[in-house]
Length: 319
Image (cartoon, rainbow, N blue to C red; front, top):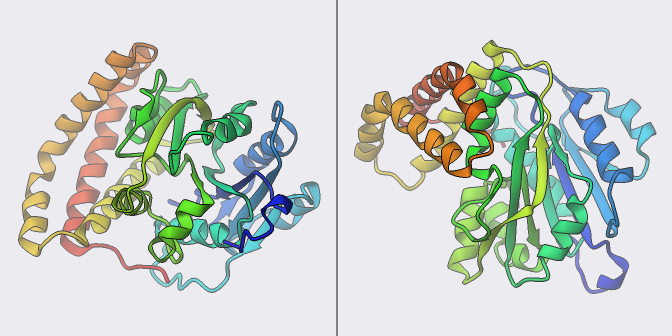
């Protein structure tokens, strides 16, 4: 992040939007990003001053045309990542492009979104108001706006813990699909995220510095994933499960990795009942959860298989 010595000249909020549609495809496009940018640049109620940054790789179609539509958005090309491990299935490069966007952010607050997460009309104002508190990072609520069983099942697997009513206050977790940080606190732990932003690692590093991450139910984005197929959803679950385990491997001995891999067959049942309990306790979406339950089981099985592979072999890092 840039020096804030002349803070009065900088925006209140920098928003780094990651394009994540290439998890299961060798290319990505701007179909979801277009609506996201429209909402950020002209669809906010009582907005603070906002800087929007879109870091992107060279396999994203439509960026040049979109940059003409949104000249106020900073489109940041990222062309120096080793993509040799990328075969149309991966997610580690998303962590890298987030970090690149954050490095050039000028705002006193830095927020992270995904292209398919459509912010509510009061999202930016809610972020700035929430940071009147002393919290270093604040994660928001994530809801589903596409009423299909498959979308609901992906939503519950990914973001069920963030459905409203979201319990406010200090939290051990916050999703990089809708979270924001005070730039001054991120500067304290810059070596942790400058090359690759991983939410779990960043939030733990802040905790070790005596800083707190919290949740706020008024900061809302909606998962707006259109055209989702079951095949892509299953592959995505596998990729994310493998990546999750590979991230944990850093702090696990090899015997522990083998132990967790051996336990992976029971994960679908454990995760399903955890998601069901959350949906039932929040009350708003339990009917949708039951409607999507068969698909959710399939997705959890794919995740568990990916997690087992991740513990055993990890993933090849993009640099």
